[in-house]
Image: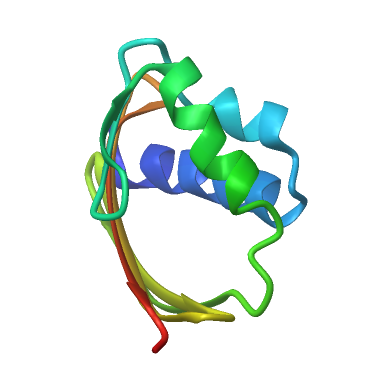
Length: 108
């Protein structure tokens, strides 16, 4: 995918997340999508991924601190209430998020 196409998918995804529209968020994944998160391990498919977004809906205090996109890959760092640092890498294929890695550092 081109950088512009990847950016469009990520923008749609972030808009849905900020609106807490979990159904719309899940449209960005397939049953083959994989999310790897330091707090939950490896999740494969919409059914396994959905609870992560349900638990974090709204993400109070979310602030994006950096974002970069190249080709099919998007990298973002962020903070939120109770989270000192978050980082996501998304790989987009055919208009869907194929792989996403997430690191969350909880505030102590």
